[in-house]
Length: 201
Image 1 (cartoon, rainbow, N blue to C red):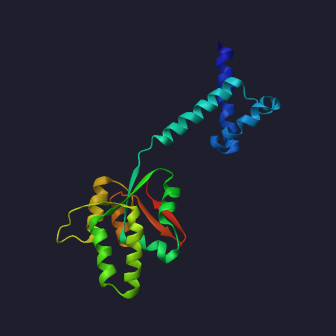
Image 2: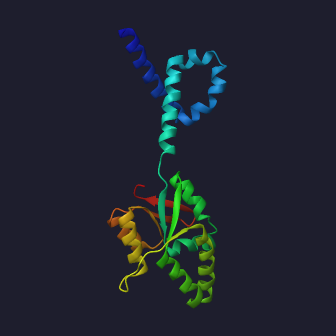
Image 3: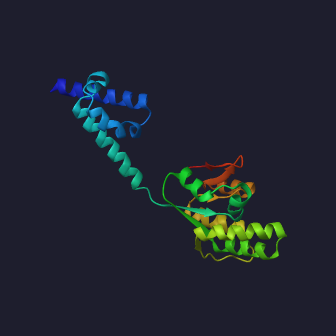
């Protein structure tokens, strides 16, 4: 019985070292079909069949944890929707890559109203960019939120984000600072070519 426990402990240490050496379980598992057909694998890597089974179960559990992640809401500020036209960057694709999970892009109704106002009353350049931003906004779910006459558009975003405790995508430095002071995660454009996350989702 003691020998069995010692063998299991050795196997677990071998698993840890193997994962560290190969960087990730996802790197190892897709190659098992080849490894099964290589008798030298068990001799060279020194992993028993029981250990191999344990490793597969561990990998499956990790995949289940990832799949069980809830869809995260992301509130988009108006200036964030200018990024595609200004820097030729697909912000929705980049958000998916950054978050590595399902996300729900949310556009608050006051933000949509702000874009509509700019598209009608701004400078020719701003009107054009706002019109494009509204087209990109069609990919978002519009959530209707009441706005007090004394509130700014940023105030509404801060209020809702603090209530939902969900990330906000914005390039406004002052808004980013206000949100971070409240512990709200922020997503912004870094070096005009990639998105970056401040905080934890």
